[in-house]
Amino acid sequence: MSKYLISYIEIERQIDFYYQMKQIEKKFELQLTVDGFISDRHQFMLQHVYDVSHKPFLFGGGLLYLHTNQGVFPFQIQENPSTFIQGFKSLKTEHS
Image (cartoon, rainbow, N blue to C red):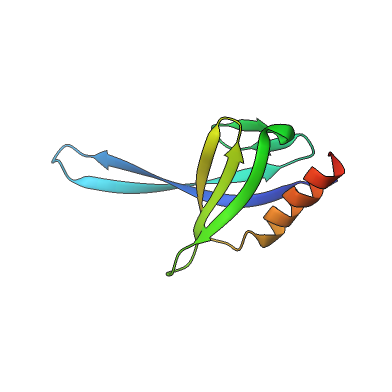
């Protein structure tokens, strides 16, 4: 089984020497494997993820939410997550 990938963005705010705020956009990948989800900061076992949902923004992109036993984790995305979400749903039904 191949992995499903979706890119997500984290925005880091920094203040320089002259108290000017800069926003640094960092790009990462959220992977869906047979075992679960892997992000830059977290790993979730498939059985601990209850649902994956998406809230689109009017200007494009949106938020992808992982609903887990540890709470809801948002990921800011720029692409359509329908294939990624469908991959999750098919894996959940296979492992139920």
